[in-house]
Structures are given as structure tokens and as C-alpha cells.
Length: 112
Length: 118
Image (tube, rainbow over all chains, first blue to last red; front, side):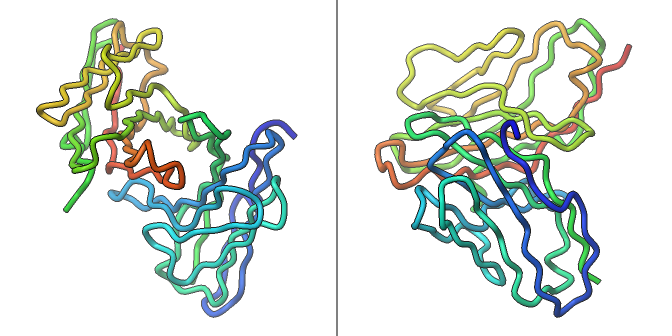
């Protein structure tokens, strides 16, 4: 693994189903983030974690939950998916003291 | 109120010419950071350049420079000598509260699609 990996690459999901998007980084970055990207709206922050064991809400947290049990992993869970959660989801990480956020390749999620 | 505004949904530029992508921002925080990211058609987000609100000089990274006009609250990206590979979406982003170390959240604009013509 080099950088940030996300799984799955894409997924079609029935409304009402539970889904977990996985994000793993091997850079030992303390901070991690989840964004969603929708046409015409840029990227919007869903949840973030400044360090393992802590999480915080971003701009659009409703319908999503996260956990940060260790430094490397930051899964995003949709407890009961709805069509408005159809989007491309990006995970990002940042080393403490740096400004740059590194992004994963994204997960394209379609909720029908 | 929108924090980051990119007023150019799409732009064309001739190969080898320079192009400026506009970005204006809104914040009352005296300490903030401004970023530009590139998103090619493959979808990944690539960091290009960063400017801190207290930086005295405009940031430069190779062919990229950031025209930072603090009083006007603008942070335009200038790409010199455009190449075909520069065709992509470009996003401006801001992080408020540089001093408040708990806040490292990025706010993104809606993006500008740049197409470089051969």
C-alpha cells in the first residue's frame, strides 16, 4: 500500500441498506477526513478525525457515522442509505503540522 | 453565504499560453490558508499550491503561481505555459483558523473546468 486506498471503487446500493466505505492510509498521518463530491457543489466535508480515538462533524454529517480505532483506518458508515447520498466519496489524510491534505482515489456510490 | 466562489464554470486556453483561474473567498478570521487542487478526468485530487494569509510573498510551484490579493479577498491561480495535460477541473479551497489547531477543515469552491486547446 502506498498512500491512501479506498474500497470499494464503486457500488450500487438499494435504499435502506447499510454500507461501510473503507479508507486506509499507510503514511501514519494523524488527521483524516471524509468528503462527498456532487456536481456543481465541489467537495463538502462529512466527518473528520484529528487523531485516533477522536472524531468530529463536518459540513454535511447527517446520515453518516465514522470511527477511528487506529491511525490507519477511517471507515465511513451509511446506516440506512438514501438516494440523496448518491455521490463520489473521497477520503483524505494530513500529517500533523502540514497544510496539504492527501486524497484517496474516491468511491462512487449510487443509491437506488 | 458562500465562503469560496469560483465564477468561471469553464474556460479554454491555447496550449503554451498562460491562464488565470479566479477564486474569491469570504472569512472574518485573520488567519487562514488557501489551496488549489487539480482533478483530472481520472478523478483523483492533486494538491497544487498553498498560500497562508500571513505569507508576504505570493506562492509559486513550478508553472503554478497564486495571485494573492488580500484586500480584495482573491486567490487566483495562474498557470503559465499551458500544457494539454493541464485540462482538468480546478478547485480552490480555504482553511480557516490556522492558529486554532483543532480546525483543519477545508471548504471548497464549485470548481472551474479548464480545457487546453492544441
